[in-house]
Image (cartoon, rainbow, N blue to C red):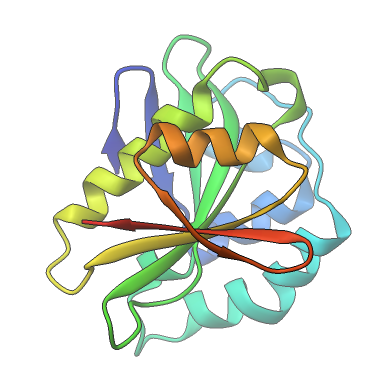
Length: 167
C-alpha cells in the first residue's frame, strides 16, 4: 500500500478485482469504506476481462504491475479514483500507467497526488527506470496531471500525446 497526504493507494487482489467489477459496493464493504456510486465503462470492463484479471491470476507475474490500484480518500473514507500499471517493466525499464478520477471527485487535484504516489513507489523498484503514459489530446486535465508530476511530452499520434518521466 502507498500512502500520500490525502490518500491510501491500495493494489487490489484478484478477488477484490472481481468485487470491483460488480459495482455493488461489496468491495467497499470489504475494505470498510463508505459506499460509492462508481460505474465501469465498457472499455474498462473489457480491459478487466481480457488483460487485468488474467494477468493478476498468473502467478508467474508480479501482480502489482497488472492490477488496479484504488485510491482511497483518508478524509472521506471513500474510493475516489484508480490507477493501473500496464504490465511489468519492459527491457528498458519502462512501465506504463493509466488512471482516472471518479466523476464526483474530478477537478480537485486528487489524481496529481495519486500519480505522485505511484511515481514514489516506482522509484523504489530496482527494475523501473521510467514511467510512460498516453493521454487523449483533448483531455487537458489528464495531461496537466502528468506535467505537474514532471513528465515530458515525447511525441504524439493523431489522437494521443505520449509522455515520459525518467526516474
